[in-house]
Image (cartoon, rainbow over all chains, first blue to last red):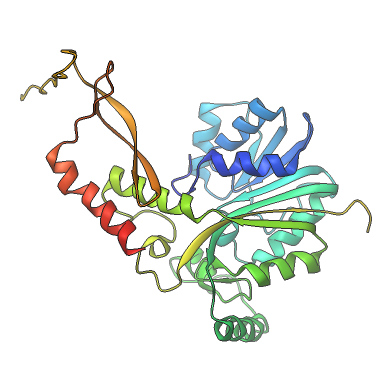
Length: 245
Length: 64
């Protein structure tokens, strides 16, 4: 299981209650890791799952455990390897915060979803952000988006640089709910519903401290610190690609 | 080599085993493996755990 996924499968199960997809539905797991969620969805819900991840080590671990898993190397920002209108569901659990351009990944997911298909996202978010901060972030993101980003410009920690790049939806790996919903609506998603799951984040922190004695080693460990400047929470969100344009 | 000490439940006189236990504090809950009696469910919290990691967790949750 991912080293960073608060709530484990509890949040996944809750999302599946919203999705209400039939057995045999085709589902894409973006950031599938070793494919454990896919195995669970196939077994419990009868879905046919595919998954992509950027970690070769985790993909290898998954293939060794279950050679039948349909998992491959891939980035959520580029889903060109999949046909448009080919999935009934796309999930991104604790993945969107790591993607360079989250708006692009949400758009790609929209493209590969069939009409009536469902999206499920769970990730970190900033609780009650200051309106001035939200506005300043939008201005900075707009300014940065005009600057071209060339290959090889990143330093040693490319993922960290991408995560901290300003986006109107995200700051330091944490999302802003209102701009995120606005972006989803602009892409075309409808029936957008989100809920706070921050208690799962606190439980996750407690379990990690009990097990390892430290929060180090988690992605975005600053967000887990009690004195975190952003008051980070955890959310789950589901949305639908409308049946009619 | 030092032999691992067996813990016996005082009430049931059976050996305690490492089992996952759910702890609750300030409306938050977390699971961790500690020695537990398989019959009556009594748990043993080692002092090192109570004053170390468990105290860290309490502090973390209190500061939230």
